Length: 235
Image (cartoon, rainbow, N blue to C red; front, side, top):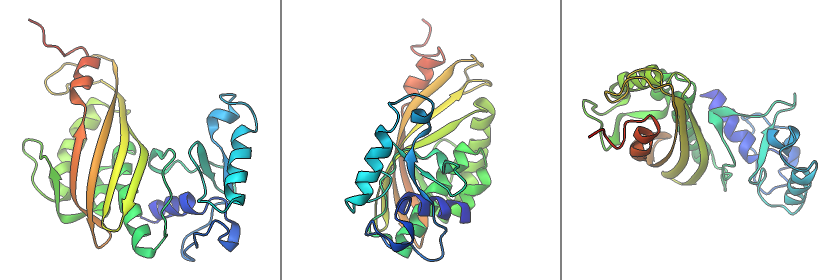
Protein backbone atom coordinates (compact mmCIF):
# COMPACT_ATOMS: atom_id res chain seq x y z
CA UNK A 1 0.00 0.00 0.00
CA UNK A 2 2.86 2.37 0.74
CA UNK A 3 4.18 1.90 -2.80
CA UNK A 4 0.79 2.77 -4.28
CA UNK A 5 0.58 5.84 -2.05
CA UNK A 6 4.02 6.85 -3.29
CA UNK A 7 2.76 6.61 -6.85
CA UNK A 8 -0.13 8.91 -5.96
CA UNK A 9 2.30 11.42 -4.53
CA UNK A 10 4.45 11.29 -7.63
CA UNK A 11 1.48 11.96 -9.84
CA UNK A 12 0.20 15.00 -7.96
CA UNK A 13 3.44 16.62 -6.87
CA UNK A 14 6.02 15.79 -9.49
CA UNK A 15 7.36 19.27 -10.17
CA UNK A 16 6.08 21.47 -7.37
CA UNK A 17 9.13 21.34 -5.14
CA UNK A 18 8.57 21.74 -1.42
CA UNK A 19 6.38 24.84 -1.76
CA UNK A 20 3.38 23.34 -3.51
CA UNK A 21 3.80 25.80 -6.38
CA UNK A 22 1.27 23.94 -8.51
CA UNK A 23 -1.49 24.85 -6.10
CA UNK A 24 -1.81 21.27 -4.88
CA UNK A 25 -0.44 20.93 -1.34
CA UNK A 26 1.56 17.76 -0.85
CA UNK A 27 0.59 15.59 2.15
CA UNK A 28 3.54 15.56 4.51
CA UNK A 29 3.34 11.81 4.98
CA UNK A 30 4.02 11.05 1.34
CA UNK A 31 7.44 11.19 -0.32
CA UNK A 32 8.18 13.80 -2.93
CA UNK A 33 9.28 13.31 -6.52
CA UNK A 34 11.96 15.57 -7.88
CA UNK A 35 10.43 16.80 -11.11
CA UNK A 36 8.46 16.10 -14.23
CA UNK A 37 10.52 14.92 -17.15
CA UNK A 38 10.11 13.78 -20.75
CA UNK A 39 8.88 10.23 -20.93
CA UNK A 40 11.25 7.51 -22.01
CA UNK A 41 10.09 7.68 -25.64
CA UNK A 42 11.64 11.16 -26.00
CA UNK A 43 14.86 10.10 -24.34
CA UNK A 44 15.03 7.19 -26.79
CA UNK A 45 14.55 9.48 -29.78
CA UNK A 46 10.79 9.12 -30.15
CA UNK A 47 10.20 12.88 -30.01
CA UNK A 48 12.29 15.97 -30.75
CA UNK A 49 14.69 16.61 -27.87
CA UNK A 50 13.49 19.25 -25.44
CA UNK A 51 9.91 19.55 -26.69
CA UNK A 52 8.36 17.75 -23.75
CA UNK A 53 10.72 19.34 -21.24
CA UNK A 54 9.66 22.81 -22.42
CA UNK A 55 6.05 21.75 -22.15
CA UNK A 56 6.21 20.63 -18.53
CA UNK A 57 8.28 23.64 -17.48
CA UNK A 58 5.75 26.08 -18.90
CA UNK A 59 2.93 24.00 -17.47
CA UNK A 60 4.32 24.20 -13.94
CA UNK A 61 5.30 27.85 -14.15
CA UNK A 62 1.72 28.66 -15.11
CA UNK A 63 0.55 27.11 -11.83
CA UNK A 64 -1.40 24.26 -13.42
CA UNK A 65 -1.34 20.67 -12.13
CA UNK A 66 1.93 18.82 -12.60
CA UNK A 67 2.80 16.07 -15.03
CA UNK A 68 0.67 16.92 -18.07
CA UNK A 69 -0.04 14.25 -20.66
CA UNK A 70 3.13 12.78 -22.11
CA UNK A 71 5.20 13.34 -18.95
CA UNK A 72 6.49 10.93 -16.35
CA UNK A 73 7.04 11.60 -12.69
CA UNK A 74 10.75 11.14 -11.98
CA UNK A 75 12.18 10.30 -8.59
CA UNK A 76 15.28 12.03 -7.17
CA UNK A 77 17.47 9.15 -8.35
CA UNK A 78 16.28 9.66 -11.94
CA UNK A 79 14.06 6.60 -12.20
CA UNK A 80 10.65 6.88 -13.81
CA UNK A 81 7.64 6.14 -11.61
CA UNK A 82 6.00 3.20 -13.40
CA UNK A 83 3.68 2.04 -10.63
CA UNK A 84 0.72 0.15 -12.12
CA UNK A 85 1.97 1.04 -15.63
CA UNK A 86 0.47 4.50 -15.33
CA UNK A 87 0.38 6.69 -18.42
CA UNK A 88 -0.76 10.35 -18.38
CA UNK A 89 -3.17 10.02 -15.45
CA UNK A 90 -5.04 13.18 -14.46
CA UNK A 91 -3.77 14.44 -11.06
CA UNK A 92 -6.02 14.56 -8.03
CA UNK A 93 -7.44 18.00 -7.27
CA UNK A 94 -7.91 18.75 -4.48
CA UNK A 95 -5.42 16.27 -3.06
CA UNK A 96 -7.24 15.44 0.16
CA UNK A 97 -6.30 12.53 2.40
CA UNK A 98 -9.51 10.71 1.38
CA UNK A 99 -8.81 11.25 -2.32
CA UNK A 100 -5.26 9.96 -1.95
CA UNK A 101 -6.47 6.87 -0.09
CA UNK A 102 -8.95 6.12 -2.86
CA UNK A 103 -6.33 6.69 -5.56
CA UNK A 104 -3.96 4.32 -3.73
CA UNK A 105 -6.66 1.62 -3.65
CA UNK A 106 -7.25 2.05 -7.38
CA UNK A 107 -3.55 1.81 -8.23
CA UNK A 108 -3.16 -1.27 -6.04
CA UNK A 109 -6.10 -2.92 -7.81
CA UNK A 110 -4.41 -2.52 -11.21
CA UNK A 111 -1.02 -3.53 -9.85
CA UNK A 112 -2.56 -6.91 -8.99
CA UNK A 113 -2.92 -7.51 -12.73
CA UNK A 114 0.31 -6.00 -14.05
CA UNK A 115 2.47 -7.48 -11.30
CA UNK A 116 0.52 -10.76 -11.50
CA UNK A 117 -0.04 -10.73 -7.73
CA UNK A 118 -3.64 -11.69 -6.87
CA UNK A 119 -2.97 -11.08 -3.17
CA UNK A 120 -2.87 -7.33 -3.80
CA UNK A 121 -6.63 -7.44 -4.34
CA UNK A 122 -6.94 -7.79 -0.53
CA UNK A 123 -5.47 -4.30 -0.12
CA UNK A 124 -7.69 -2.70 -2.74
CA UNK A 125 -11.27 -3.91 -2.24
CA UNK A 126 -13.78 -4.36 0.57
CA UNK A 127 -14.72 -7.79 1.91
CA UNK A 128 -18.12 -7.46 0.22
CA UNK A 129 -16.73 -6.12 -3.07
CA UNK A 130 -19.01 -6.73 -6.05
CA UNK A 131 -17.57 -7.32 -9.52
CA UNK A 132 -20.28 -6.58 -12.09
CA UNK A 133 -20.99 -8.58 -14.20
CA UNK A 134 -19.73 -11.60 -12.31
CA UNK A 135 -17.86 -14.19 -14.38
CA UNK A 136 -19.20 -17.75 -14.03
CA UNK A 137 -18.30 -19.20 -10.65
CA UNK A 138 -17.23 -15.89 -9.06
CA UNK A 139 -18.86 -14.58 -5.90
CA UNK A 140 -18.38 -11.39 -3.91
CA UNK A 141 -15.25 -10.34 -2.05
CA UNK A 142 -11.53 -10.50 -2.86
CA UNK A 143 -11.09 -14.28 -2.54
CA UNK A 144 -13.55 -15.07 -5.30
CA UNK A 145 -11.54 -13.42 -8.09
CA UNK A 146 -8.14 -14.85 -7.21
CA UNK A 147 -8.58 -18.28 -8.93
CA UNK A 148 -9.79 -16.47 -12.05
CA UNK A 149 -6.74 -14.21 -12.01
CA UNK A 150 -4.35 -17.15 -11.55
CA UNK A 151 -5.91 -18.98 -14.50
CA UNK A 152 -5.66 -15.86 -16.63
CA UNK A 153 -2.02 -15.29 -15.64
CA UNK A 154 -1.28 -18.88 -16.64
CA UNK A 155 -2.85 -18.29 -20.07
CA UNK A 156 -1.11 -14.91 -20.50
CA UNK A 157 2.05 -15.04 -18.33
CA UNK A 158 3.31 -11.64 -19.52
CA UNK A 159 -0.01 -9.84 -19.06
CA UNK A 160 0.06 -6.09 -18.45
CA UNK A 161 -2.82 -3.78 -17.63
CA UNK A 162 -1.72 -0.25 -18.50
CA UNK A 163 -3.75 2.52 -16.89
CA UNK A 164 -4.35 5.33 -19.38
CA UNK A 165 -6.81 7.57 -17.54
CA UNK A 166 -8.32 7.88 -14.08
CA UNK A 167 -11.23 10.29 -13.61
CA UNK A 168 -11.92 10.57 -9.91
CA UNK A 169 -14.30 12.30 -7.54
CA UNK A 170 -15.11 11.43 -3.91
CA UNK A 171 -16.36 7.86 -3.74
CA UNK A 172 -16.29 7.25 -7.50
CA UNK A 173 -13.74 6.69 -10.25
CA UNK A 174 -13.64 5.82 -13.93
CA UNK A 175 -10.55 4.06 -15.31
CA UNK A 176 -9.55 3.51 -18.93
CA UNK A 177 -6.85 0.93 -19.52
CA UNK A 178 -5.43 -1.45 -22.10
CA UNK A 179 -4.76 -5.15 -21.50
CA UNK A 180 -1.90 -6.83 -23.35
CA UNK A 181 -0.31 -10.26 -23.20
CA UNK A 182 0.81 -13.34 -25.12
CA UNK A 183 -1.47 -16.38 -25.37
CA UNK A 184 0.62 -19.23 -23.89
CA UNK A 185 -1.99 -21.57 -22.39
CA UNK A 186 -5.64 -22.52 -22.87
CA UNK A 187 -8.01 -19.56 -22.61
CA UNK A 188 -11.80 -19.87 -22.86
CA UNK A 189 -11.26 -23.31 -24.34
CA UNK A 190 -8.86 -22.02 -26.99
CA UNK A 191 -5.50 -23.80 -27.24
CA UNK A 192 -2.39 -21.61 -26.93
CA UNK A 193 -1.69 -19.71 -30.13
CA UNK A 194 1.44 -17.77 -29.23
CA UNK A 195 -0.32 -14.64 -30.47
CA UNK A 196 -0.48 -11.32 -28.66
CA UNK A 197 -3.66 -9.59 -27.55
CA UNK A 198 -4.28 -5.90 -26.95
CA UNK A 199 -7.77 -4.88 -25.89
CA UNK A 200 -9.38 -1.82 -24.28
CA UNK A 201 -10.87 -2.03 -20.79
CA UNK A 202 -13.25 0.39 -19.07
CA UNK A 203 -14.09 0.26 -15.37
CA UNK A 204 -16.33 2.30 -13.09
CA UNK A 205 -15.65 1.96 -9.37
CA UNK A 206 -17.63 2.89 -6.27
CA UNK A 207 -15.39 3.33 -3.22
CA UNK A 208 -16.12 3.18 0.49
CA UNK A 209 -13.73 4.06 3.33
CA UNK A 210 -10.72 4.06 1.02
CA UNK A 211 -11.48 0.71 -0.65
CA UNK A 212 -13.24 -0.33 -3.85
CA UNK A 213 -16.71 -1.61 -2.93
CA UNK A 214 -18.20 -2.17 -6.38
CA UNK A 215 -16.78 -2.41 -9.92
CA UNK A 216 -18.63 -2.29 -13.21
CA UNK A 217 -16.27 -3.57 -15.90
CA UNK A 218 -16.24 -3.94 -19.68
CA UNK A 219 -13.49 -5.60 -21.76
CA UNK A 220 -13.40 -6.28 -25.50
CA UNK A 221 -13.09 -10.06 -25.35
CA UNK A 222 -14.40 -10.53 -28.91
CA UNK A 223 -11.36 -8.64 -30.16
CA UNK A 224 -9.13 -10.83 -27.96
CA UNK A 225 -10.67 -13.96 -29.44
CA UNK A 226 -10.14 -12.59 -32.95
CA UNK A 227 -6.52 -11.79 -32.16
CA UNK A 228 -5.80 -15.35 -31.04
CA UNK A 229 -7.56 -16.78 -34.10
CA UNK A 230 -10.71 -18.05 -32.39
CA UNK A 231 -13.25 -15.59 -33.78
CA UNK A 232 -15.26 -15.88 -35.87
CA UNK A 233 -15.59 -19.59 -35.03
CA UNK A 234 -14.72 -22.10 -37.70
CA UNK A 235 -17.78 -23.31 -39.70
